[in-house]
Amino acid sequence: MTQQDIKLTRLNKYISDTGYCSRREADRLIEQGRVTINGVIPEMGTKVSDDDVVSVNGKPVKEKQKRIYIALNKPEGITCTTERHIQGNVIDFIDYSTRIFPIGRLDKPSEGLIFLTNDGDIVNKILRAGNAHEKEYTVKVDSTVTDKFLTDMARGVPILDTITKPCKVTRESRFEFKIILTQGLNQQIRRMCEHFGFQVKALTRTRIMNIDMKGLSTGQWRLLTDKEMAEINSMVESSSSTEEASDYGQEKPKTKGLHSKRGVNSAARQKRFGYGDYAPTAGQVLNEESTSDFWNQGEANADFDEQDEPIGDFWAQNAVKTAVDSHQDESTDESTDDVWKQAKATTYSDEQIASRARFNKKEKEKSKTRFADIAENEKAKQDSSNTKPAAPRVKGTLSLKKK
Image (cartoon, rainbow, N blue to C red):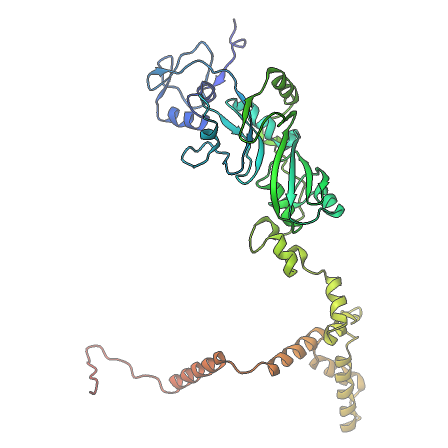
């Protein structure tokens, strides 16, 4: 048997496949020099075969374990984590005899189907969005599911600095819909619904690829059959486990996404108060202000000549005309063109006139506040200190206070 015929496996993966620990923990053991191959301390990245003797702390690790694949109908309140110190973690909930870990995640308040395994090779092949393996969910929301909502959800929603991939969305009832995703972004469905002002009341994953929850009550689990695993293996045969298959979503326009966070910048709040993604467009602002704001109406209707000089503002034209008339009364020797140039140089633009008018109006309506009094007092103190500077202190002198 040649060297090429011998199947070699990275050392950390070999240790992980035996069920001793995770790959990350195996790397730490290798760095600490606690792992040996045939009695020799190896380097990071060393590969081994089944004929090699791998030992941890001087004791040979066991042979590779049989592959385990579990389907669990996770109840609400269970956390999909391998951290045993977290109360209600999924590992303690199942209490399986050997080391297993969940494939992907299902939020704590959500319920439904999730896989657990000890096979690290299959995890990324199932999870990577680029591999397009389907996951089906049933979602209940707090508002009526409309046709527009279904269409917008299926097209793609901007969340987490990306746009979700197109998906299948169908109505189940007035407040319930079914969605089929090929992604697994953090709280994806909840964030997608929140973007349109909907709040998720209940979320259940009903299917992963070819496996559904038939025969599994909430909290029950079972081992996948050989037939089911054969179907899964055929489906992931051409799938990639590398980062190239991540393909998280569509390209997002280069705008800041306020909807990516929950709370004060949530989409529901933006929609309610009319800012962020729900802020009025320029056309809407002009249409609204045209009926209520005389000053902005003048700005919106202003025309511009080739030199970008405003010529449509009544106030600017009137100021120029007044200046010309008054100047002509005083002297008729100076040319009219010079007068126009001088008058135009001292006038304001349309935008400046409108802005000053609004500012002056607010200033007249605004009463004097205590902050203005404080500012005036501070200015008076500063002026008095500038007029009467304090006498310089001489080193070694004493200042006596009069009692």
